[in-house]
Amino acid sequence: MSIGQTIMVTVLRLGFRGEGVARHEGFTVFVEGILPGEIAKVRVVEVKANFARAEMLELVEESLDRMMPPCPVFAVCGGCQVQHMTYDAQINWKRQLVVDALVRVGHFAAELVEGMVEPVKRMDVPWRYRNKVTMLAAPRGEGFVAGFVEEGTHEPVALSECLIRPKMQDELVNSLVELLVRKGVAAFDEATGRGLVRQIRVRSTIRGDAMVVITAVASLHDAQVLAEAIAQIHLSAGRVVSVIEEVVPLAQNSRQVSSIQERVLWGAPELIETIMGLDFYVSAQSFLQVNATQTEVLYQTALELANLAGQETVIDLYAGIGTLSLVAAKRSGRVYGVESVLAAVNDAKRNCELNNTHNAEFYLGRSEEVLPRLVRQGMVADVVMLDPPRAGCQIEVIEAMVATGASRIVYVSCNPATLARDLARLVERGYQLERVVPVDVFPQTFHVETVVLITRLLSPTEFSTS
Image (cartoon, rainbow, N blue to C red; front, side, top):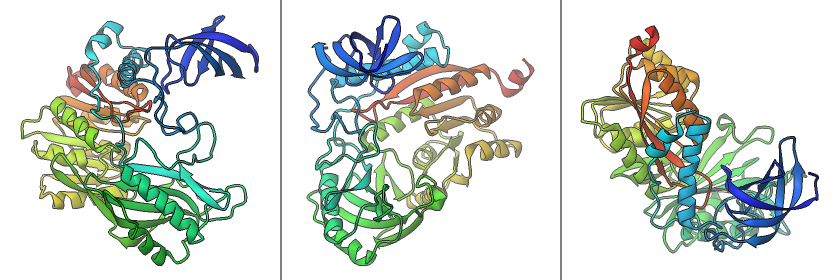
């Protein structure tokens, strides 16, 4: 197989990012935008030792699961990956992603997994759900654009409407870019090093309040005047209540939170979001699930699996601003949250006060450092709940969870592969799978959240002596 070669392929399945997976003369070929069962003429664009990538030239036979993507820039924008699939097909595929990960990565028996993974909890209206979007800014002509990054590049896609963010955010982003250009504020140009704005982030709440965060390489000129102008942008279904500047020095990596210098230019330093009847302060750097509707489904599922009766001691790892912690605190005796981001811990403590919650406390630090220390100090728990980042858990977290003596662990995951790895480690240490419930928090994308209940078969002492 060689670059430029044209071949015919039949797609067997979808990969974990939604790409078509085919075989040609014993060689694996990945093709974007093609569905299982479809036959297409493709051109090879990359060849590696054991696989190739190809682009579709002609769709010869079409799947019944295919639909016309409603977004005009779907083919180039990196914000969504599977708009060309019917929602029923997306849901079925996401369940299969979880099944495949548990079998291939976790090495659980296929018969066990197939019978245990429940149907995906779907979204009634799988559009306009994102409460936060982060858009890359780049110069374009006399002005600049801000959008999701084009697939395979580092260039933002210009778009006036995004079908996975609320219409209010469309209005706000369009008006904001127009205002910045009119005020002479330039986007940062990576090629020349000129300009200021690197990213624009917008967060909104179900009640229609919005926060604008402008990330720049240096402080904005006339920042206060600019912030007041942003606050006056008219929105048909909401209002701007916060404008924040984040300065990330050019020599620093913008993903390093410690390097960000944050300044509130106008309004409040945070928003207030309502989840399951509780109110939560959300600051610019704090994590919150991006789909308010499905977050409630996710947390309700986690609580159902935790089966709290009112007296339990609960540990919540990777606790963020305390959303799951405080929801669990209403149904348990005591909750201990662990979170590594200072701003989130501060939000969590304020959220306790906001909701008159007195049986939850929070520790600042990495879970792999804090939890083992708490265990050494004698902490035990009835239930451990966790929602780690995509990388999953460090082995120190796994071993410390076991050492708490928890009879139930509720694991919320955004990555089926690392979930499967961590579940296998817990099973090796005396636990067993009970329920696996996928939840569609990110329609039109390859992401799937999964809530898993595992229960203890052996006590930590029995395990260590077995």
